[in-house]
Length: 267
Image 1 (cartoon, rainbow, N blue to C red):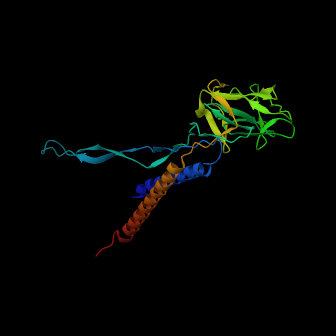
Image 2 (tube, rainbow, N blue to C red; image 1 turned 120 degrees about the vertical axis):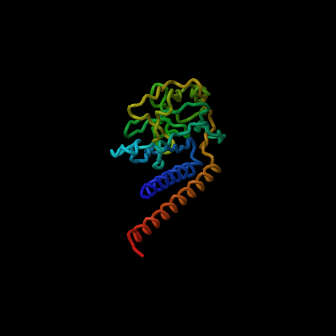
Image 3 (tube, rainbow, N blue to C red; image 1 turned 180 degrees about the vertical axis):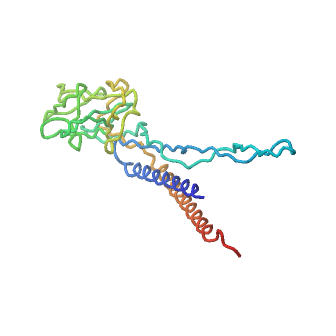
């Protein structure tokens, strides 16, 4: 009976994790460049169940004691738990916004950005950029946008900015630099760093390389790839799942209390 309590509690914890995951996807449904996360669930290790008995002697005239044997019955599950929460890097919808400093990526690539304080390099699909006070291209949060060589990109104060599909920047017809775009052989080696940025998991190989299958689109932004309707349905499912496990815990707890209160009682 106690095993059943643990199994139901494990199911409730998985349902709670699903609610947290779906809620985060819903909260970022309007965040440019956001990639939804999935929830992978696995069963906990199963236990082999046996029936123990004493095998009586074959000869009824033989009074020797029987042999203790065990008969396999099957397996008993012990619930489930969260295996992983991988990111789904599917392409989000591209929308035109008319902003010359907004860029969307069509393809599997990423922009490279660098934190001005820590110097950490991360990768993002959010191309909402701006010209900073020091004359370089940065994100809205102030991170430095990098060129293919990992350097900052100077942006003239005046002039019409035009960027081609390779990321080459021209200001009034004069080349100013190039926005770096990069692709990975193994996107599963990336981990979220905030809402829209990703870093390589320490100890893993991502296989970063210059982008060859990605185009830069100016005057555009990539929307979140989250499915709002599906997320709402998943949220309702997870809440019902949690409620079912909660009721199971309550029922088993009541049964345990009843057993404790009546065991050994004589009429």
